[in-house]
Image (cartoon, rainbow, N blue to C red; front, side):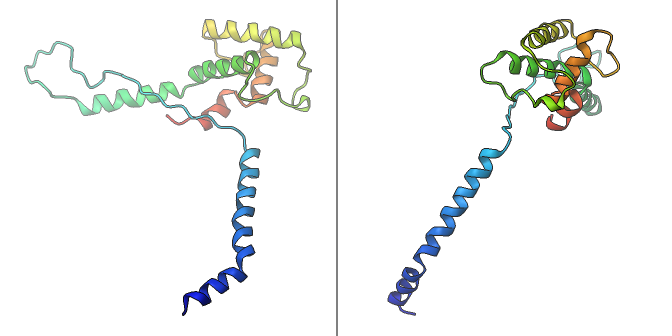
Length: 172
């Protein structure tokens, strides 16, 4: 085939060659802008499980009990996924969204809640979450003694910051 023939074919299909990439870029930008924002964070944790600093009766150096180290790592990962830890994370996320000018998630629609989020309710929720965070209390659906516990749990569920919702979004 001749190069001139190829150029003539490309010239006749020029608008098709331009239209489809531009249309696909526009669609990609539109759908990505409508997606919910997801934040990624990574951290390293120094556990010291593999260091051999305690005094041994046996003089063999460098001998590690692989089963014991593996068990410690598994226990640490499971404790990071526990409800008390996820509760503290949810309190921090909720306080960030209530106090920040640039929240991760916005206030949910009023139809999702049984009450109206007024400024006084929000200020009382801030105090409640600070108290819960400072005292390391776990907020569960079965612990509704106080008046703001039920409201706080409803707001956490509406924001999808409750521990069951967060556990599906975390990978440790």
